[in-house]
View (cartoon, helix red, strand yellow):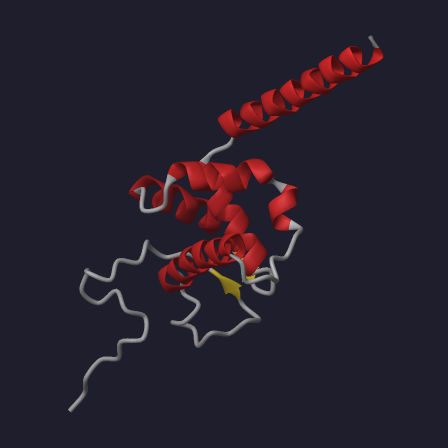
Length: 145
């Protein structure tokens, strides 16, 4: 009788945790995950918060990164933002690759490189970087004869 009650309580607790996880997953947005990644990886920079939110909205609208991946990161919350992934297993490598993709696009979309990569000034978001659009390269210099 005691074993049966323990199993039922364990199943109820597991069902409760699954319900909470599903509820969190339903309430988060991809924009929250993108902003979380930027603030985690670029914590050493002073970022314009409104610009980060605008970038997150525009990148999420482009749908280049799967929504379920972004929503999972956002649902993890502090578990994601407070833990470093030092290993080199498949999960850690996938997380780092996704982070680097988002951070790279953000830095290319901002005035960070245009202002000489100065880490002391506030980084402002300009416009979503598009490699196929002419003159969107922040490293391009005008040709003078």
